[in-house]
Length: 202
Image: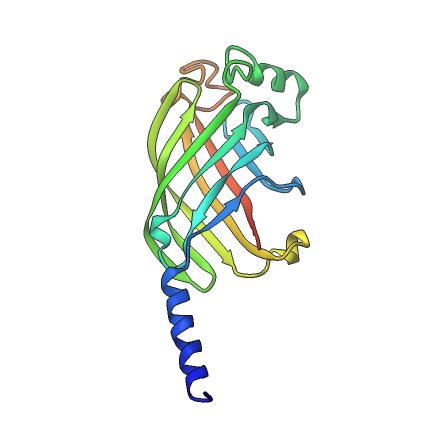
């Protein structure tokens, strides 16, 4: 019996490892810390803003990170800049038209060129970006930080934590965001920074 127990535990551990399922992380953040920032370095009027209306999920397997999938949804009405009138214009019909297009979405299909460095998985996120009427396949650099069993340090709930970081550029004219207009004040290139923590409670 004494010999059987260690053998049984070893077999069980091996079986559990083989059958471990990918982990689904919820991107909705009750703390309100998750955000996406955007910068437009136009000649006359550099613009800096942010958005915090983020929902979605990421399915991640630390043993097969290249198979990571998910969807990030940004509520366009949460797009914010400091100037009130500029914000009204940004939300209006000529620009983001938030009443007709309430969300920007990125559908993650896979990761490529993934390299593991400690808790970090560094690679490229491949998927479809949808803004206004346009949807385009893109590949952007991304770092996923997988923190096993450390959700309680952030949310006071036991579970796993996945932090997603990315920095990339989208072009207004690629997505029909008032293309070719007001370029001296609103640059064509929009630099995006993403900082999102996903939760997987036990």
